[in-house]
Image (cartoon, rainbow, N blue to C red; front, side, top):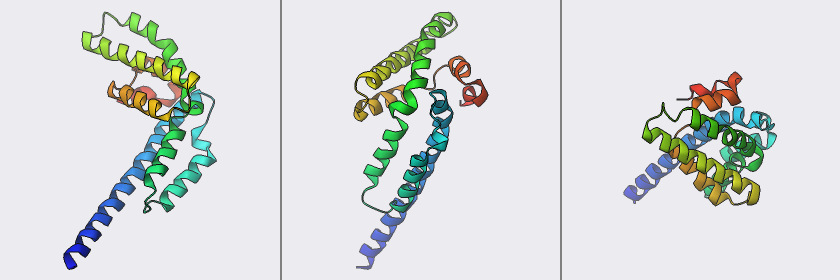
Length: 168
């Protein structure tokens, strides 16, 4: 019985630790997206609903319903209202940037940026035609993340006052 109690306590402390890390990473993700959201005319940093979600997140951190809480937060972060505007602007700048940097990029870099551009176009298509398809949006965002950050030149053109080009 003592062994079982020890395992349960150990598992609960690991869960609490993981939830604390998740909570912090979510806050950091929101802070990182806040400058991009302003580009689209939506100030995520002043969103009372996001702050309310964080409070709910902290209150329910020990509950069984964590998956739905995380999904709700992610749906808000990846929503059309927050990301479509900035992603559309990145998409518009990408072809010229790729053309201008074709000779200065390695073959691998050019392929990676080209793939990222295609994923951004596809994401914008989802936002325009099926913005409630959260599974597809998350899949595209993960694939984009695997390609790394968009070119610093594009980010600097979009938001020079936020210093987004220094995220590397």
